[in-house]
Length: 197
Length: 197
Image (cartoon, rainbow over the protein chains, first blue to last red):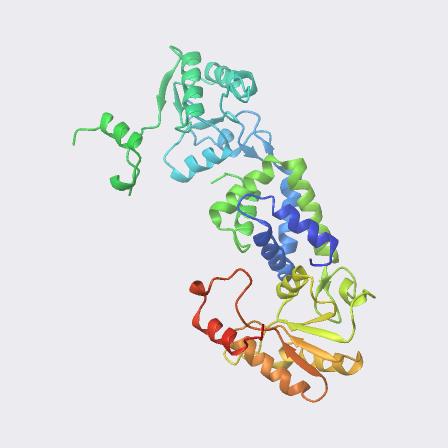
C-alpha cells in the first residue's frame, strides 16, 4: 500500500499490539514517520533499551531492569505482607491504588485443568518458599474473581493453611457503581458482606 | 506505577500515538515485554531501521527509503496523469483502491487562512513545476471534501488553468451506502451528478 517494505513490515507488527488494528496501526506509523525526531527516534531508542535491560524480578516476577525489582529492594515496603497477583498488569493495578505497602508475588497465570497448567507451571512453589524464608505474616490473595482465579486462590490457601494469615480482596459494590448496572452475583456478594454503619 | 523508569517512559511515549491512550499503551507495553523475542526486539530493530532510512520522496512527497519513491521510479506508472492529495495517508488510501495508474503529488496539507498556511508552505509551486517539466496532461485533484480541501482545490485549479486537463474525484453515494444514513449534502451532490442508465 505504502510501496515501502520497511513501512509495511512496521504496520504489520504494530497491528499485533493489543488495542491496535491494521487501520490504527497505519495511522500510528504515519504519525511516527511524520514526527521522526520527536517520536520515532526516541521510541526506537527506548525500545532498544527496554529490550536490552528489562527482565523478570527473580524474587517476585515483576518487570525490572535489575535482578531484583524496585519494590523488592525498597526498604519502605513491608516484608511481612505479601500480595499474590496473577500477572504484572494486576500488580500495576494494585500500585495505582497506592493503598498496599507490602511486597508482591506474581504467579504468571492461574491453574487451569483445560490448558493443563499445574502449580509447578506457576510460581506457587516459590511462593511457599518465600513465606517460609521471608518471615511473611499475611498473604493477601488478589486474584481475579473468575473461576480459574478462585480455584487458584483455594489451592494456595490449602498449601499455606496454618502457616500464615490468609486474606483476599473484599467483594462488593465498586466505588461510584450504580446498583442498576451491577450483575446479580456482585449484589449478592455485597449483601452477604454487609457492614454495620 | 510499574516502578521502572524505562517502562514508564515507554508507556508515556506509546500513549502519544493516535488510537492509544494511557490504558491501552500500558497493555501494549506489557504485551511487548511479555513477547520480548517475538515482538519487542523485532519492533525495536524495525523502528531503528525506519528512523535511519525513511524520508520524503524528493519529487512527490511520499514516504520512501530512497531519494525517489517506488511509485515515482516505477516504469509501470503513467507519467502523464498526476493525482494531487493532501497527505501520505490519502496517497495510501488511493493505492488501496488500486484503480489509479499514474503518479502522485502530496501537498503536505491544505491552504488555511486561520493557520496562515499559504501556497508556498505547501508543495504547490513544485506541482506547477512538475506539470511543466514532466509532460503531465491530466491533474486529478483528490483533496478532501472539506472547506479547506475545496479552497485548496480551487486555488490549484486557478494556477493550472489552461495548461492541463483538470479533474476531481466524483461525489455521490458510497458503494454499500444506505440513503437513510447519508447526509443531505451528499444526497444533493449525488442527485446533481446523476447518470443515465
